[in-house]
Length: 161
Image 1 (cartoon, rainbow, N blue to C red):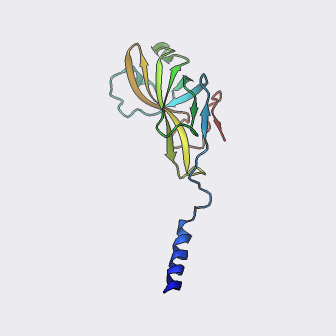
Image 2 (image 1 turned 90 degrees about the vertical axis):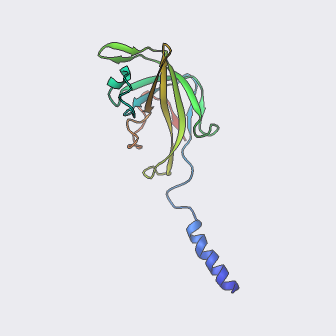
Image 3 (image 1 turned 90 degrees about the horizontal axis):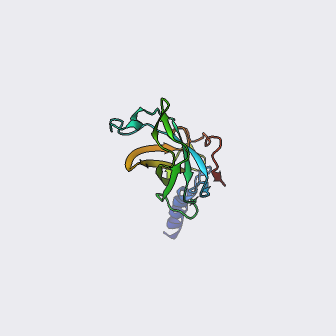
């Protein structure tokens, strides 16, 4: 009886070991306050909101000056960050959101089967406020959520270790 219990425990332990090539840890993201990052506008979930951002195409670049330092080693998944637009958003030469508009975002940990570590940290812009008017949107450092291998745009100063 004792041998069969040991054999069963050994058999179960084979399935409890980590999978080679994937770890439960993602490379950290660290961004110093004052850094300007380029975020790419994603497809809006509610494009019929009736605001001027509806006309902006997917991939429009938002230059964001980060106001809070971000460190995924110290900050938890879902931690908010704040910034301001470093350049205005233009549509056909007309300013639709001024520079210095307030930016809200989140540090998120995403599961990714395509990423070598199985998980990756992402910074997401979730909203803008300009002249008292708030706009909900989603923008990320990568041009697409489906393309995790794409590096942040040139000029972005994120570091991963």
